[in-house]
Image (tube, rainbow, N blue to C red; front, side, top):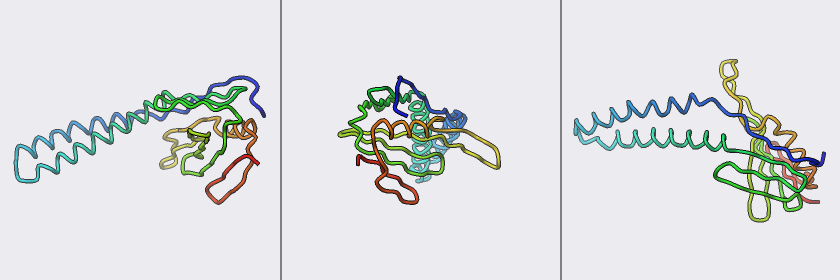
Length: 170
C-alpha cells in the first residue's frame, strides 16, 4: 500500500456549540465580577479568578476549533506533510524514524517522529452521550492513513503494550 498519488485528508470537525456556550458564559461572569468589585467585601479576587478561568477556557476551545479547521495531512509519493496553522511538518518517507500509536478514549493518537520534528493526529473517534452520537473527531480515514505511513516508510512494530504500539526501522 505504498502511496502512488498525492492525497489530502482533513479531520472531522466537532460542532461549535461548546465554543458558543463558553463565550456566552463570559457575560454572566463579567456581571459577577462587577458585583464583586462593587460590593468590595474583600473577596474581589474570586470573581477575577473566575472570569479569567472562563476566558481562558473559551479561548482554548476557540483555538482548538481553529486548529482543527486549518489541519491538512497530505500523503504523497515522496513523503507526508502535516499543517494546522501552528505546525508545518514535511517528512520524506526515509526521514520517518518512529511512529507511536496510543489508544485513547476517542480514536487512537498517532505520533510521527522525524529527525528533528514530529506531528500527531487522531484516528476517527466518536463522542456518544446517553446513547446518542454527539460528534466525531479525528481523521475518518485515520486507520488507512496510519497503514500507508507505516508501509511507505518501511517501519515495523518493535514494541507493544496494552495501550501503546511503537514502530521503527528494523
